[in-house]
Length: 100
Image 1: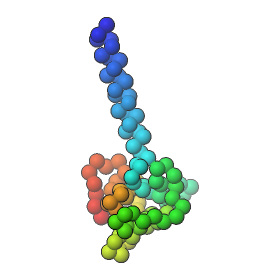
Image 2 (image 1 turned 90 degrees about the vertical axis):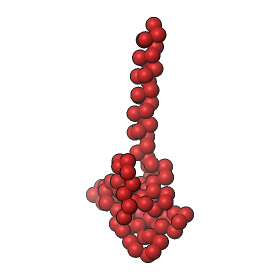
Image 3 (image 1 turned 30 degrees about the vertical axis):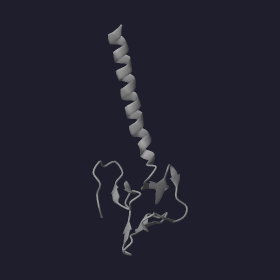
Image 4 (image 1 turned 45 degrees about the vertical axis):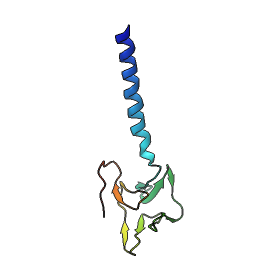
């Protein structure tokens, strides 16, 4: 009986963990570029951005995927790239941060 209970608990733990991975796609602190109706859009918390936003460090993100850094340089996001709350650009599903 203890073995059955342990197996059920482990199974639920794996399901909850996998579910947590799936819900992280929303990236509450990230702005991620994706294709929608044939054009690049930036999503934040599962909502499409409709106006520019400025992060606390001065980095600006436009709804079309243009990121203006604090030094004035501009980078265009590619599908699957995200900007975190610190203005770092990375792949959406990458575990290691990719600086640009």
